Image (cartoon, rainbow, N blue to C red):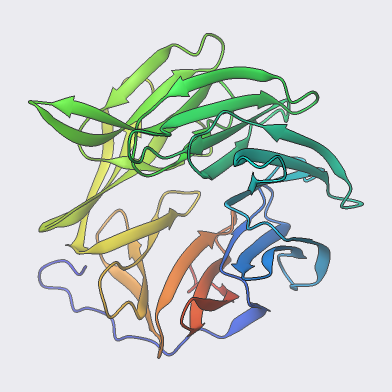
Length: 332
């Protein structure tokens, strides 16, 4: 959105991709920004491509007859993980599969007690544990499943009955944040719960309609987004564990937020209602749109690289078919 008295910047041409991953649906960057992981599902199953972020050169590929619900990379880039619905036993078992990046070898399959698809996945910063979350649906799911990477042993199961899955460790590993759902004045309200990882006790709750977006790099706060019908989208930076709102921004009605730059200066947004054909970078300090890109097809934003130089997005090529693109950010 533009501030009163300031003109909205003209929509720019489609950004020129640095590289493209045909047939993939979403992509994100590794913690150090050297790699990008592009994933997608077709009727043939799941496909993951690990690429050099700067050039797009393929480092490793993984294919499976099972679709991938979520993907994660360890901080040291030595191990990656996917979640699948394993039906080999005749029952649906939501499973975390761990692989060695250098060889693509399967290290371990970790069955979980999840009742729904594990749609959010992240390694702890030290790489010793991994957390996966399934969203609550029809009285099933709504838990964070934490397991040891070395053995697959269950460490903890945390109840967070959110209808949208998102789980993230703080960069220092002291906290774990997840989407949650609360009953406020007799009605269900989306929110966020932050746990201490030493005891798994609750450190902080936000029961105000906001959902988890990401941690700040120093681990002192979380960025949240609030998307409600008929209400302008809100973005906030909230201190942890004190809950103090450090920054707040209102976007346009029916905007969504995909990511925030590491320095907290800009958000990458898109529309959640048709036509979904624009991507916008907006300043969190002033609310001014610094760049808007227009596309001829529906487009879905992904991730911003840690240094802010690159961003990913998926562009529709046919019904339920996409290509992932990585492009240069607009001089952030």
